[in-house]
Length: 279
Image 1 (cartoon, rainbow, N blue to C red):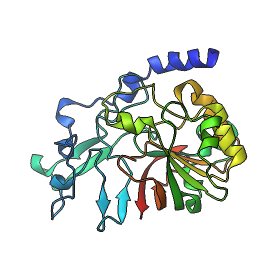
Image 2: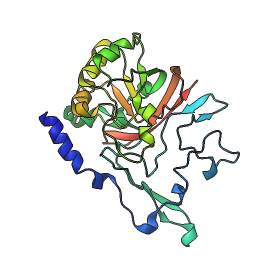
Image 3: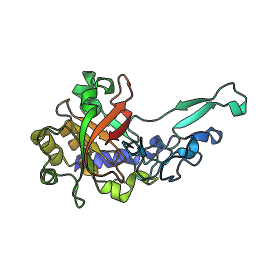
Image 4: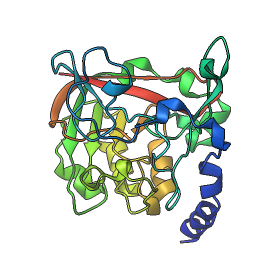
């Protein structure tokens, strides 16, 4: 209870830190229309008109490739009640304003939108040992993966994990939850009632499966009441990789080839990541 109270106190201070304010003239032109739900295939020629930021299935290559990465947009929810991430990209130099080139600047925390947690995120020994995102095993981040629907009436507990009957030998599992049904990643406000792993659910996965990559559909793999304890359970060993805030809307359950590539951010415990499924 004390840990939960401390977490709540810290979160009360987060919104101002998460909302990255910029000057009125700093709005990036790429954000124009970025919140539109442009479903279906992009028009020929691509460009801004071909962007798709809604929950519709994003398929490429005649449906062979499915993008399960959320676009990084200002209205993404932040991990604080009612907060959004705010503008992430600022146009520092603009040809429209007389510059000889366009130059954008990116500013964001490393655990926003679709991202990966390295073992040092909530394990100081791993952090001190240099287990940052640049040391993550690309063999774990790329390979066959199982997309499953978890029971909708509960967090991901030991009981719900056992009920999924995930076969031994499966190393990568993407867990779709009530978060997708509720469209939490499409709401312009953080919502701490999201579904995630409990401590006993995380321990059950570590102790009873061969899973090394855990993917989930909101910005934390751990439920809010188990925010620290579930992460600690996952990171007891350094061989589990957590991928959070995946875009799993309208994707069929089943087996896919998963490809996830984080940025090589030396020293960082987290990174934005691009993830796709190959049918």
